[in-house]
Image (tube, rainbow, N blue to C red; front, side):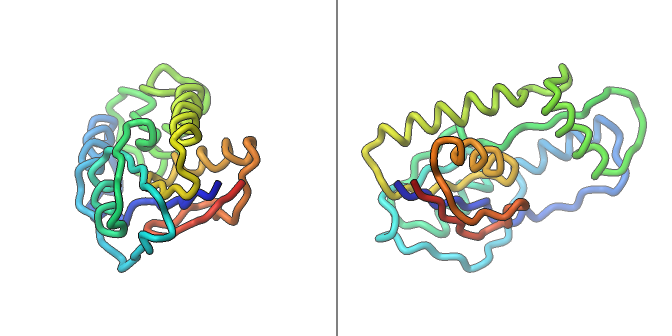
Length: 177
């Protein structure tokens, strides 16, 4: 089985440097519906039998731009959501909000809508879906953090490939079993 992993095109956004918890939450919501900057990536439809795509607009736009075959949209491969780790009205650098939210996710902090176990559950549900689909060459368009977690879980299932730690936008990574 061969999987093609693609992180959506780069999102066009103007996020402020310092944000309150409310501003960070609003920025994350806005990010989910922001437009993307296409980078010219095209996928040969003959190399892939099917494309699974996150249901978030940035992934859908990417999938529809690069792939002419059948695209199946699913919430199972949406980005790992992040929320402010605190409701205190303090302004912090955007990067601190992101890092602290990922730590909170990893530690299953109550501030997060999904924890690491929920993410792994989604990954395994998705794995069962595509494993039982009958397809052998599957293109997957999703999100950076989700794809990082997905790749780590697929390695446990015998997949191997060259995937960068920081998955780049609009680049094809191939793993196989």
